[in-house]
Image (cartoon, protein in one colour):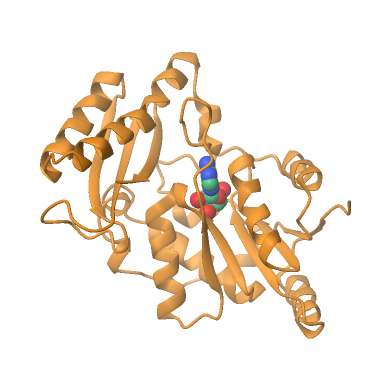
Length: 282
Ligand code: AMP
């Protein structure tokens, strides 16, 4: 199996993708912030099944972190990431640019999405979706892929990226991949590395509680009551704070008058200083 080639400049990425396209090859992009795990590898596998060439970007994007968040502490291990991608197979190019390559001196442009980027995560991380939208737009413009794959793990982000691609008329099809979980249901996340043993045990309860809320809604409990009982159950399980437990329209994330149509339950909660998000269909 061929190992991926690492490139660090947008110019090189353009030259390679233009060449592939000239040869009739379809291209897939998997944007990541590194510290790769089986969830990321599932995105690569999905891309690989659809296209001839796969680019995995690894870039810890400073603009999606608030000053008090964990940008400095965020796990970075490019060598390990590379080894993981090489042994999983399916990646042609690892695009790992330095900061200045994507944000030249004096960088002053931001992309703001409304619609699905309002509420939920945005209430607690006001800079987050503008940071995500700006970097994703830059990566999509640089790589001009036929498809780009995003995880349902970051469900609101997925809808924001879909909106962005549609609104900007980008030619890239946005695909989603299901959440990969540990055996107790905890969604794999690079931030799970922060947990001590007891925190890790509590973290596993997030998925269980979301499942409980989904079942309650299906059995006729109101939206408000489902959200309230989910919040209480997370605090009971040992989470320090619960930012939200919300049952929303699955396609738009807008608030619901009652339990109708395709719904999604989403939650964010903190344990031992680490903030977790998760979601599932209702
Ligand atoms: P990140 O490196 O955390 O920015 O994630 C990069 C991509 O991987 C995003 O599209 C995430 O939604 C996706 N992802 C992260 N964790 C998981 C998981 N457990 N299952 C599926 N996709 C995931």
